[in-house]
Length: 359
Image (cartoon, rainbow, N blue to C red; front, side, top):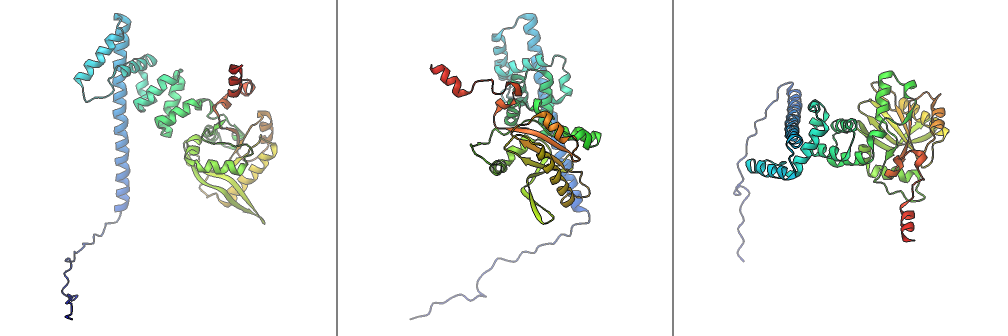
């Protein structure tokens, strides 16, 4: 048989080698690049805020004119409907000029009649957020609180909606603490505002007979939602963090680091009501974390006891002589738990209502 001829290795054509010119970067290039990136990002953010500020200001002026004409000349809904059509015809590429939106603009002007809002937080948040505040929050000071919290925490409209529904403005800074006695003045105020009471974890499915370890695992499984509920500044470090003290191993349920407070936050979960011995155990954990984990630049650690229930007087007595900064708050999975304690249990359940209607 005749042999099959194969090409020699030398005959195989290869793509020509490309020369790579190695560029030696000058000293300080990386620092300059990082600085320029940061400056560009900051400029982009300022541009977005400026555009949003102009848009909300424009909407306020439109709303003010509509309100004035309705008051003086008796404009009805038909005139506003016609105005929306004419504006849309003149500016076809511009959204937000619908009849419904014009009515929201009027509501904005009515809510802030003197126009001073343009210097406040509401002009720095998106229009959709403002519409949500106008429709769901009645008091002006509460609207301003949510607007400022939106800027601080970077809340999306969906998250803002949840925060309004769970009455975040009532819960912020309400945890029972000993911060005024255990922390410097300015720092104690900041730490107090970092905690709330109660914490609402509506995303949790709590089953009967659930243990503390199960609760802990459920929270970690939804850690993004937990961080949103905790608020700005909290960074998750880990769960069941080991602490070797003497011959025994101890484990912290959940460990966070607060970027603004510059300290660890030790969270101890309880499936029961607060008991005085819980404060003693937390005091021990804080000492161990400060000794074993705290960096010289870190501030002293803070403890947060999340309990199923608590008696304010018992908590105050238990924390009175504790040397470490500790806060105590309740955790909940339902909105109804934000009612005052004296009213809890006085309202009928869904099953009770259904039973009454069936009779």
